[in-house]
Length: 290
Picture (tube, rainbow, N blue to C red):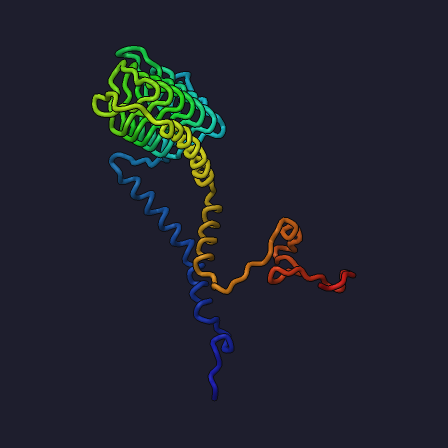
């Protein structure tokens, strides 16, 4: 006598039986979990409350709220606080802080505030806002404190420009330099050291590169803004597309998909009459086949 499968004897196959068991016990497990959670909460001496951390990308201080142009990139881990205005094309990168809590901060167009930089103001010892002109690049880990930085300047990584100081247009403060309070960095000069001092005059190429850097950073910020704005679904789709490209057979030949082809998609099943980048026309449509 030949034995049949489980389904022939009226019994479900093993995978289906396991699925049914899990469906049966799942409600009981959920109930037990809620009971254990309630029991643990009742045994706490000091009740623990877990809250989501609110976003600190934009914060009001008193009655002052940041005014940021619509196309400014503020990284998810950056903070802009208080009496701050930032112009079009500018960017505040990851970990940077622009804190206008005791005075105002004005940032122009196409300005880059690099990673982990601090832009602040002064009110207690002196009364200085922070004014940053157009086309300024502030490198990562820099400190810009209660000072004036005019158009088309470069503040190097880790540099400090302190209270009452002024950096004139077309100037560069070298990485790690410290421009001490009330100093003036003249136009067309490179200052370096701690305390910072005149090192040499800038070449025409170096001055031109300041504007080039500002524009390049503005374009790069737009790319980061697009990525940071993606939803969970978009990120998952990107991961799937990347995996598809990595594992796709080298002989794969993509089908032509122009705008007109997309419009011809039928019920999500693809575009009829298209194969190997060739357009085919069915006789039933009254056209001559190609």
